[in-house]
Image 1: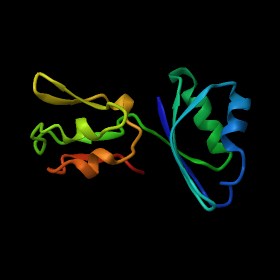
Image 2: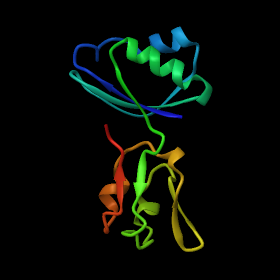
Image 3: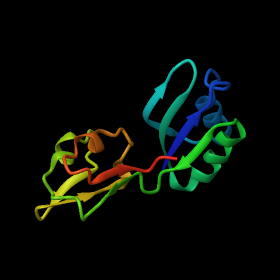
Length: 128
């Protein structure tokens, strides 16, 4: 399962990920991170059976956590199956299946490359 963390200015300089790993005894995979001196946005991959435990641990530390069940949405009415998203996606979220673009949302890290590259604006990210 994927979690998106929104880290506020007051806590961005704390070792949040390390403390949650130690508390929950859970391995976390950082799939995307953009952190600076005042805020942060991090996408983590967490084992499904540990997701609730990890989410609650981050929330106790003041982190806003969003479960990314469907991180990217493809509008089938707008999509012409041109493959722009297939070629630009760094994680292989999109692929061709019988000349149609299909989505494996479990691979999406919400980088936004597909949204920016789609000439028909058929894709959007789920943001809080």
